[in-house]
Length: 145
Image (cartoon, rainbow, N blue to C red; front, side, top):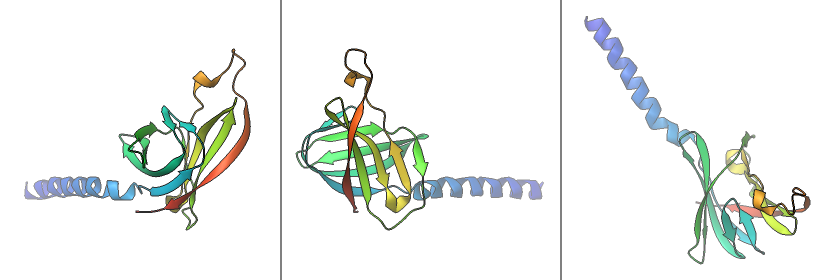
């Protein structure tokens, strides 16, 4: 009986330790960027200015938080996340011109090796013709704490 009890307690200890270390391994990211024009990111409308961006995990899905110098904050659910090799390079935000509207379509957090993708809002389709991404721009994100 003592051996069985010892095994159960050991298994519980392993589960508790694993759950404590999981958030540390989630590799959250924090960075800053300057947006030179208005852009849409998920449900958020971002005005030109300075922003802080950070990642978090809620349940099984990644979440992106954005805070502007003007007090604006937004939480955006990310779409697919592609894992890449972490590098010392800076991150970037990819913005596509969709039917004349600037839309964030990717966010790369190079420091933690993750690339987040975002869907283009269906509200940007015109007259049922679909979405046409004409130009793309990359906004650098400076890694920060």
